[in-house]
Image (cartoon, helix red, strand yellow):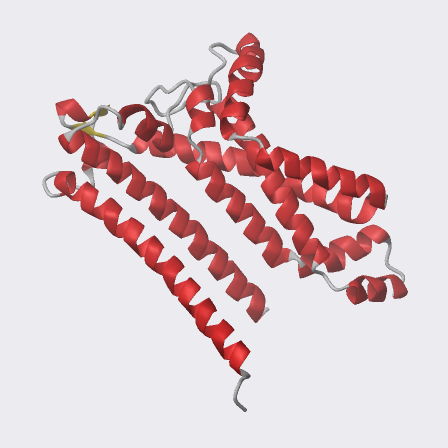
Length: 284
């Protein structure tokens, strides 16, 4: 049976939009690769891991400390924000009175709209001095984790809330009819049913944390080193690009594009992980 004309037009429009989005991603990858080629043609990829340090003007291109700082900061932020975001969504969806839940969601949406530079400025002027009293200098990997966690918390909370709202009410009513408690219905029915949406929200938040620039630049100290503990100042890949791109030329500039290429690959790995998780959930 053929589709109505309006449906066919909508299908063509949606395919065109999907193709355009894929083309944009491909063009970004090609652009990053093209700009990285000047240094990749005579510098082996292994040197970006094995060189003694990051001094492009001296021919040293080690990205390992900045890649490690990026991954540590992202992982720490996700580990902090994910349980808090899920708990926030559960509170607003199942425990809070309707009026309080509506106001709570508006507050979370407001947090999501605050510019990253504001989070960074607050972290630099308030959070870093507090941490500095415990362990100088204050601007550190831990500060970056905490600021990033605060930034991605609204993303996790809102996406998990939307995933829980999509769970059919009949599931919860059936669980209640079987005598399950409220938490039994939530933990045994709602959360498993919303698992793909929850995973997508956490991975989306992780992608934002990986790509965040301004806030981490202000609160992590910008020292190129492998962190030995949470109180060490570090520099992430995004902060490195922002700090050095303005004056970089030649191989130095190309090496910064290699950093951007590494960030893009990290995001693609997150997307692939989300897709794999979704397929495994569908097969269960």
